[in-house]
Structures are given as C-alpha cells and as structure tokens.
Length: 138
Image (cartoon, rainbow, N blue to C red; front, side):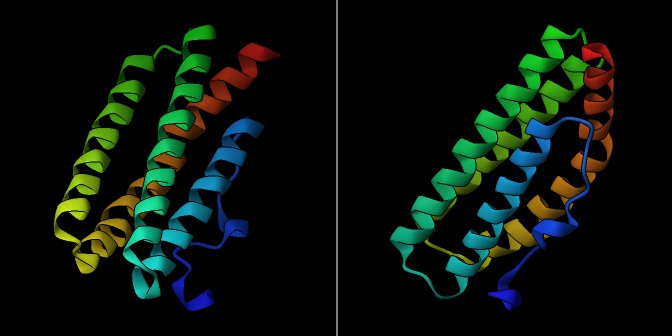
C-alpha cells in the first residue's frame, strides 16, 4: 500500500491534545484507505470509506468544537466556520461521487484539496486551538 499512501501516519504533526492527535491519525488512515480503494477497489468499498471519512470528520470537529466552547477559545466562531465550510464541501463531493462515480475527480479532490487543507488546518487552527485548550486545562 506504500504507493497509495497520501501521508504516513508517523509524519502527522502532533498538537497539544491527545484526542486531536488520535483523531488526526484516524483521519489519515481513512484518507489512505480511500485513496487505495480509488485505485483498485469496488465502488461499494469507496462508498463505505467515504461515508466513514465524513462521519469521522463530523465527530472529530464536534469534539474540537465542544472543547473550544468548554474552555472559551476566542477564535471559536472562525474555527467552527471553517469546519462547517469543509463539511459542506465534503458532502457536496460525496454526492457528486454517488451520482457520477468519477474516481479521478474524487481522487483529485482528496489529493489536491483535502490533503493540503488537512495539513494547513492542522498546522494553524488545530495547533493554536490545542495549545489554548491545553493551557486552560492546566
């Protein structure tokens, strides 16, 4: 599977909250699995992996947002807004996949949009959020 890895899980930058690191690890595993399935899997497998990836992101974003609210993170509205934007985009892409079954389009979205967004979001918003929340937690 090494040629289908989008990112090695041991290369994921770590943030100051363990649950976020665990969620990021799972997200990368799901992205890698989806990328692999897009190359040689059945459509039904792609359907399941894409649904799992979307569900994972909804849950992960919800956990982050709860911590931001609980600990009074000042940039909560901005971070939550970014989550909402990305989830809407992912839902739109999933619907496109389900109607068109265009593997190339979904793979380009994964490699050219999701992966760069993930890396940037982790390095900026998630890093700052985790540092703030970890400090508040003591």
